[in-house]
Image (cartoon, rainbow, N blue to C red; front, side, top):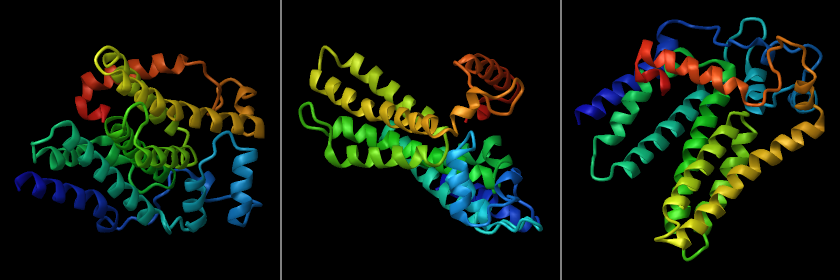
Length: 272
């Protein structure tokens, strides 16, 4: 009960503090709010797909609901709050699956999320709605992949979770490109389970392979479509120092070093 009280108090503060502080301007990326020459939502979405290096329709949608002059957030808090609830529900479910029989695992996971600097400093901004929703969709993808692997019969994964996994992956890559990482992460987890089960449970190994395939193929297909459409292809032609540019994994070395340094300086909450 104490953990649930702590989780509820922290979550309420995280969600309610913008109104309590009297905040009005809650957008850190004005390119989704102050758009010149694209008045309708359809025009903004079409331009984002064909010309922008990143395609984040959820950000375009919530940015379209914001007031371009006063920066009043419109639908941002409501869309973001719904994503936060979906993400927290997934985190609690994963915690209970990983530590069955420990009732404190669920609320403790919410406490860790609420205390994370990443959650507290990035809330309620137009371009972080897609980050929150991608995290929610990615976490639920991991849950469905887990059920598809363990609930399948023979070499076939469970049909329901497998279809749901495809739908979540498709929705995720249309929210933000960070869903690529969630898909590949789930595929990597499936590969590890398949390797460990190769001798004792060959059917489970095959189910892992069947689940891992769409986790790789859906992001790859989305990236290919974006490249062929001309939007993603513009990154390859970006000038040095541009905000978005093509990298062959070299940024992972820098990110890993920065994460390691932040872990030493700020503790494990940074990695959440």
